[in-house]
Every structure is written in structure tokens, then in C-alpha cells.
Amino acid sequence: MKLIRTDGDRMTFRLSATERVVLLDLVKAYPCVPPAHVRHRAVASEDPESTEIQTLLAEALAEQRAATRRQILQLLENPEVLQRQPQGWVLHLRPGDLETLLQVLNDVRVGSWIALGCPDPLPDKLPSDPEKAHHAATMELAGWFEISLLQEVQQGPAP
Image (cartoon, rainbow, N blue to C red):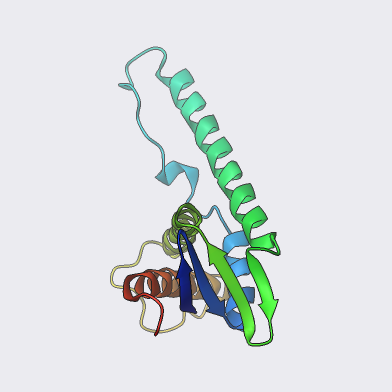
């Protein structure tokens, strides 16, 4: 993934065919962080209305995550945003779209880490269990995309 140009409020990245496939797979995995890990306490648990309030918060979070999923999938399915070119693919992102993509990738990375049991330190070998191996690979790939996007934006397009 390489930032090839910035035009006003739009950044254009070049992706290989493999990067495109992997990015779309990662985005389709969103959301990954289990709702129990994003639960917020709005009121003290001894408040008689706390269960109802917590239920409303959980529903609002689920709706927000579903909306974010629809938004990012629609964005990446838009032929004006993700375009096939002779050299591979180009991805045009506005700052808000980049922020949403980074949030989605971070959720997938952290959710995969949680699915692995929150290891600290991270395993230095691929787990022997296929499901855990998949989570480890997903975590690493989501992190790679996050870092790549952030480094490219920070460095700017190559002259």
C-alpha cells in the first residue's frame, strides 16, 4: 500500500490485488470486539433503572456498529473509491473515511487479540489450533494495514 497523491481533501493509495482482497476480508470481519468488552456503565449498578439503561446503551452500540459496517462496505464497493487500474488498484479516501477505516481495522485487530485470549506478550509462533491461527493472522494483517496507512499519510506521497 502506497500513498501516491493527495488532492485537497482526498488521498489516493495504490494497492496490489492481494492487498485489496485482504483489506476487504478484514473490513467484512468487522465488528470483532465482543460487546462485553465495549460495555460502558452509565449509572451505578444499584440504580433500579440501570439494567434498562444498559440495555439501551447496548442496543445503541449495536446499531452504531452496524451503521459503521454498512458505511465502510458501501465505501469500498463504490467504483469511484476503489478502482481497478493496470498497475493494481487505487483507493481514494477523504480524511473522515480514512478515520473510519482505521477504526474498523483497529476493532478487527483488537477483537482478534481478545479471541486469542489477550496474550501478553504476543505469541512468537503461529498457534497450532486453526481457529487461533486465523485470529493471529487476522490480528497481524489488520495491524499491518493500520500501520501502513498511518505511515503513508505521515510521510506523504513520494515525489
